[in-house]
Image (cartoon, rainbow, N blue to C red):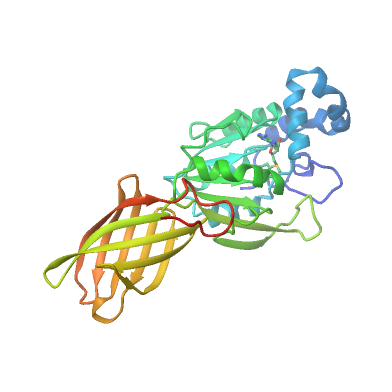
Length: 335
Ligand SMILES: C[S@@+](CC[C@H](N)C(=O)[O-])C[C@H]1O[C@@H](n2cnc3c(N)ncnc32)[C@H](O)[C@@H]1O
C-alpha cells in the first residue's frame, strides 16, 4: 500500500506534497501538507532565525543542519526490511525516523514492534498520525529524541538514513550498546572501515536526491567481542586434553590459532556471526569442528570430532582482548 507518490522535483519534500491517486488516505496528505508547509516555505529562514528564537524550531533546525529530511522511497523501505530479514519477533529502531515510514511499514508487513527517534517535532507528530491512520499505533512509538542520546539496547534491528560523518560518529555507540546479533541497515552510506556483511543496490524510482535513481543498502550484524584466549578440554582416546583457542578480532572478522596439549593445531576456518563462533581445526582423525555461542559465561556449544561423534563443549576466557572489536580495522593483538 502506497502512502505517497514520490515524484522527481526540485522541491525538497516532494514525497510529502504530491498525493498519490492510489494512496489510501487523503486526510493524511492534508495533515502532511498542513504540518510541513512552513518547513518548505521558510527552510532557509528557519536555519537562520528560528533556531535562535523558538525552542520548538531549534530541534527542527538542528535536524535540518545535521541530516536534512529526505524520505526513503517506499520500494527502498521494503528492500531495507528484506535485507535486514525483519520478522514479527524483531524490535526495529529507525534513527532519524522522518515521517515514520520504515517503522510503520515493518509493523504493517510483519507485525514488528518499533520505535522512531526524530529530532523534528513536526515529523514526530506526522509519524504518530500516520501510525494511527495505518492501524499500527499499538505496535510503534515515535519519540522526539536526539538519536545520539537514545537508549538503543532493546533493538534487534536498527535502520539509518543519515550521512557518512553521522554514521561514523554513531558507529562506536552502536557497537557498544547493541546486543550481538542485532542487524543494522544503512541507506546509501557505509561505516568506513567497518565493512558491511552485505551490500545491495536497488532501484529507487522517485528518489528526490542523486542522479542514479538507485539506492545502496548496507547490512551489518553486530559482532560479539570474542577476542582473547579461551581454554577448554577435549576428550580423545579416553583422556582429557587441554585445548586452547586464541582469537583475534577486527569488527566481525576473526583469526584463530588452536593448540591441543600445547601442540599447534592447524585452523581450517574461523568465522563470527553475531554471537556465533564457528571454528574448524585439526586434520584427519584429529579434525575438530566447533559450533559455539559467546556470552558472558564463555564460549559454549557443540564439538564434532572426525568420527562424527558430538559433545557439548565449553571454554572460559582466560585472557581478554579489547572490550569491543577494535576500531582500527586491524585484528587486535591479545593474550
Ligand atoms: C534522511 S531523513 C530519513 C528519514 C527516514 N528514516 C526515512 O528513511 O524515510 C533523516 C532524518 O533524521 C532526522 N535527524 C537529523 N538529526 C537527528 C538527530 N540528531 N536525532 C534524531 N533525528 C535526527 C532528520 O530530521 C530527518 O528526518
